Image 1: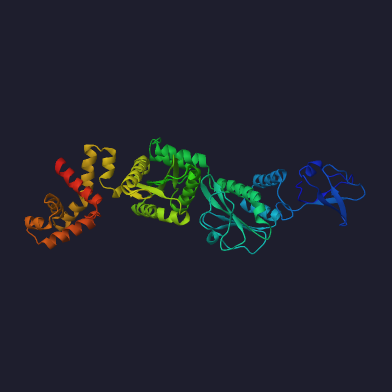
Image 2: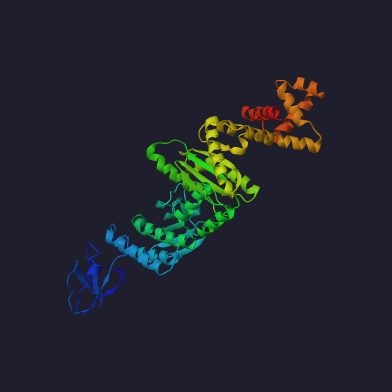
Length: 456
């Protein structure tokens, strides 16, 4: 029987030794008439005249200066019994509320209520009361002077919800009880959602290594591991810039937590892998608009991260949208984009593979076929526009470079006014997404025209 419940002593007057042995200090003993009995020690005999019961202060209450290991073990055993009975997160939260005499609020990853137990007076959600700097599995205070403590509910790196406590008790003394309860609820939520971090991680490792025979086999493997797979993905590589060794682990944890909060999908599961200090995310992109949204989120991520963690700078690389079986290609592109952005523009920058022009080819030492494909892809928008509107934008671009970017000479050879050349150059920039005053963009266009001239 739990020592915090009333324990009725037999007429023999001896307390159960296994209960008394849990405590280092004496417990309060009163008889049925409410008359106090002297404090007893472990194993002490109680008089046989009247039945008695024992009342103990609740776990972690202000009456206790601290918690002993046996008390924590007893509380953990209670949680295990509740979980084994299949009572679920609400019963676990209720147990914490009753034992600690506090209000308990449990929310899922989308901030929906899972349980609200104990004393009233707590907020409908703690989301606006978080500072944004909370780390996973860290017992934290709420901001705006709100009296409460909170901790994330996690399964591995995956945040499943939030557990918060409120009340007049010394909430700092409840940390171990809250952490134990959050862990127990995390197990229940992981079980409900089929979350098994090791099994899930193995799927992404196999997919990245091209270990599946085909897309159908990959989907079957994902379903067996509780993963909703998408038809296409965009890989994103995140890497914190070099920091002190003492802070490296904390920076990696903060980066992982911020990434999981930022990169989400309503259609399928977001995949994650870690390779050294690089965190890889696999964003579902069944449609091209999904890929565009992923690129936008990645572009804004360094700024978003700096608001929560000003000391942390992160480099970002984004690959192209690929079918599920070609995920390794997008991963390689994301890692290359990360490297190129850092080398060209410095630390903490974003590189999007599709916007890097010829640089990925130069980095990889591309083959002749890859160079031809690059030139064709770069000039395709101009050729499509010329064909549709019967214009000469591609010819104007080639001539502009051939005469050393002299607008007057180009206009003379094209037999047009120089203002027409300026107008065509603006059109070319808009169609190709390039700026002629940007040396990197200009290099891409020059390389495309030169490669096309050599290979056609």
